[in-house]
Length: 222
Image 1 (spheres, one colour):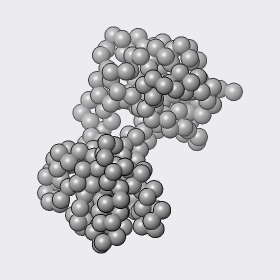
Image 2: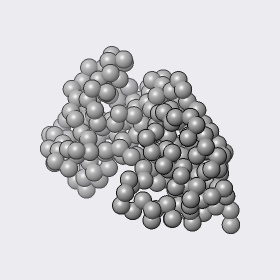
Image 3: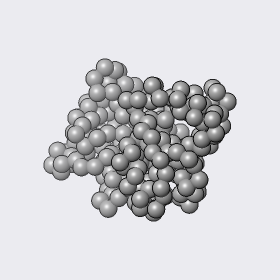
C-alpha cells in the first residue's frame, strides 16, 4: 500500500492526527525535498528514513519504488506542502500503483486552493482548477480560454509573475470579472485582496507581491 499524506501549507497545527500516525507507522517516506520534510518530522519527533521523490527523478524511480512496495515496505508520499499530486509530484507514482493493483490510500488534508476558493465568495458549485499557467508555449491560448470559461477558475502563481498575470488578465478579462487573490494561506502574513483585473494590477504594482498566490476568477455571467 502507498499512503499519500498531505502536509501543512503553513501553520503546523494543520497537520492531522491521522497523518502523524501514518508517518509514524510507515517504513519509508518519499519526500519532494528531504531537507524540508526532515524539519517537519523533527518538529513532531518522527524518525523515519527519507527518499527523494521529485519532478526531476519521478520517472526514473517509479519502478524501484513499486518493487519495494511489493516487497512489503510500507511507504508514505509527501510533498513540501499540501497534497501530493496537486501541482506537485505524485500522480505518476499513484497512476503506476493503480496499474500494478497496489492500493493507494490518500488522506484528506491541507491544500491551498480550497480555502482560497471558499474565501473568495464566488460560486463554488462548479469550478475549474488550472494550477500554474505555462510560462511560454500555450499561455496565450489558455488565457483566451479562461476569458470564455463560464465556471469559477483557480490559478496558482509565484510572486515573480503576479504583475505579468494581472496585466494579461486585464487584457483578456477587462473589468468584467471579479478576482480574489489569496497569499500565504495559514501563515503569519495570510492575506486576501479582491477586485477586478485593473484594480489588482494597480495593487500589485504599488505593493510588491510576496509569498505564494492562489488566484480565483469569478464565473462569467451568462
